[in-house]
Length: 240
Image (tube, rainbow, N blue to C red; front, side):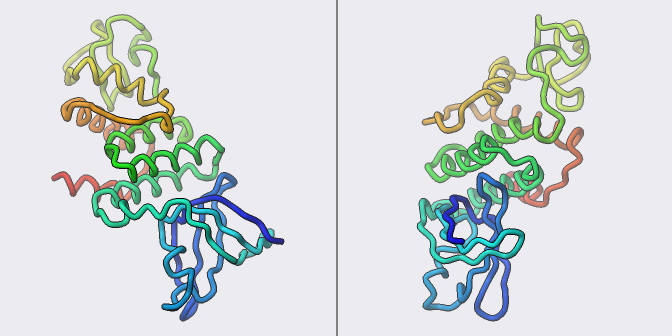
């Protein structure tokens, strides 16, 4: 049965001497396709089946079996990302993180992932976009943030900081010796969660606020998700 699927290639696996298998993330989850002759120099698949190619894949679909790729209509080759080690590192991380929640795949999750990658390709700040996705993914991971009140007493008044180890907002009465963050950091943390990624056209946030949000999320992920991602470690080394 011939089908057309939209998606992005998230993995390539060599298959024999000239072929390969690609894993394509789609709105329905990950679909594996065999690409016959894709490694041959003259194959039209050589350029269109690279990792992080976003397109429409025409396939001979076999339920519960390996489907076969017929042709590819590239929507966006993501060339800017592929030619920039920092951007590519962010997309590798975002993709590895997405694979942790992909079993619960929904239309919203797929669209958030695709839109973040397209915004990175368009030149928007990859750190901010990665942080936005990290916040949105916490619900899928079962450790969503409380963005309405102090995590210690439940008060909605006098929030003065955030703390990754404590798990969220801290009010004046519950404050001990946590690092006091910029008021904008507290405000933007909530905005990151609710923002429609597709609607973002520009991002201008101070380095101090960006770093505070990123530090909070790094700490929160380390403490509450149990995830260890090699791609995240590589990103951290870039900025050391």
